[in-house]
Length: 105
Image (cartoon, rainbow, N blue to C red; front, side, top):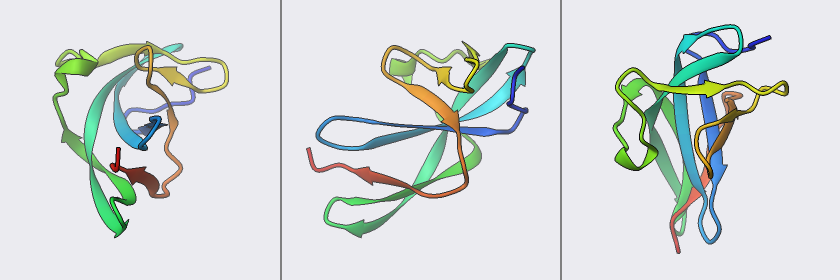
């Protein structure tokens, strides 16, 4: 069963020498799939080249490298609720808390 609803926000945190965070918003759903679009975030810098990010709902961004079409990227939802956005980015439902980000690499 698909645990997501339209409007839900997903988060992905990834990186090696730095911590990147991407947020996605569900724009369509079916029984086993969702369509997501990337949304922007606001970062509160609270250290040297690091801080905490929060998503901005309905602030859709266009990232050509993610290859998300205008209608949203179609993604299957795994049994444990994770969503594969691409080969690197896997996302899950955002819990409402800020996420650590860094950009020192």
